[in-house]
Amino acid sequence: MKCKEGSLLGDFSAGPVSTGRIILLVFTLLVTASAQATVISYSTANVQNDTWQYDYRITNDSLVQGISEFTIFFESALYADIALISVPALWDAVVAQPDSGLPDDGFIDLLDLFAGPIGLGSELTGLSVQFRWLGSGQPSTQRFDVIDPNDFQVLESGNTQPHDIGVVPEPPITLLCLTALLAIPLVSVLDRPRNK
Image (cartoon, rainbow, N blue to C red; front, side):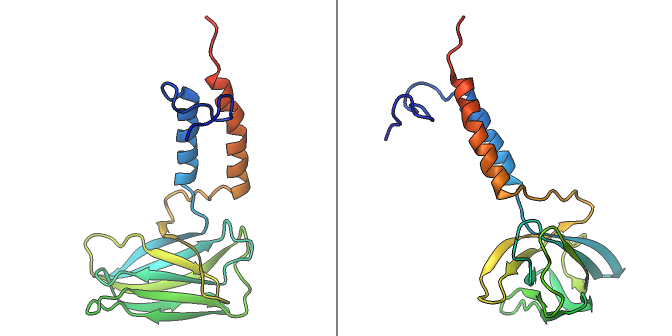
């Protein structure tokens, strides 16, 4: 199906793709590719031999309702003997050990009991976990889910990241939409034929 002549996007069947459209596409991909809302970052420390420790920081960059529950997963092929060292005050934690026999990943699940959710723009610290590392080198990123404790729906998913990597928060959705709306006139200006 063709766009009508003179429409915002023009006629895609007529000639090569314009420079303006390519710039808009690349910009949109760059902005959205790096977007991650909730950030769970960690630092690692080697406790002894193959025993390591993660110290986590959970940052809420997008959820207006706050974060009241989250789960961090431990791959069964890489982790064993998960032990909580510290848990933030007024949060409840559950540990499920990885089981390579099933195979089933382990996890830690934290639920806000009385502290109140992690508000938008706020962070939670004080979560430390020790484990036996079965992989080579240093432990790395993990998968996580942010969960609505009322209906158990996953609100967001992502991967943890080291503290020392610059954490770039996701731009708010309104900023992404505004950028797209402002880019439309830019495309039409760049698509205009130039008089020579």
